[in-house]
Length: 280
Image (cartoon, rainbow, N blue to C red; front, side, top):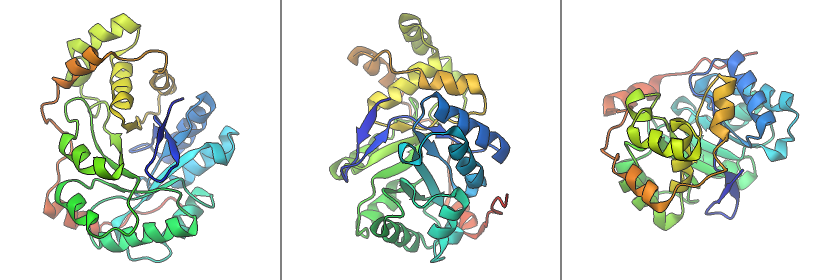
């Protein structure tokens, strides 16, 4: 495993297991097996409705809690709930999380961020961040935070490298955590000739080349899967390093193509949505 230094002095593994769209039963197995394989980071969210399953997976793995970097997110409907952090800790079955996000710049997101800062001060969250905050939302957040975030979680992949967001975050040392790291499974990205060519050189798959690109870009990457072989392959990226010329060649793919686009109307709808949290 490799690690990144964070702006508050802590560290984070460069790759984790993501659980977006993974049903509770599968999430429990994926987390358990990933940790047994050597993963040290687990990413979930209240809105994924699998926090309890991820907590069970961590316990079943036999890996000590202090060796797991656990990340979750509060949903907008909880931003004004003073008990939201304790409730997410209860669902996970833990006393603290290593990273706590607010999930969307929707609703009263400043109240949500204040919950993060409070959790950080109380030791319930050892790092904090914002998910899906870009552009004007990051610009506004910068004027209002009392504690700078350690992370922004956002879509990033070779088609969309978040160049402007990274420039904005750089002065504060905020780390980018990338979701849709393989382009949401888009074959046109994975089958780009450059990844096949580089993969042949290192005896790696195109997906492994892309994931290694993420870590060398300085991104924490959280590919999700319920396929055990894919989970194992995604971790097998630390026995080679892309050259500067290979990184530059991959950079030519940055065409601004993204797979998730939102509108203000979409954000307003997200603010009203209330997840039905997993009960068992």
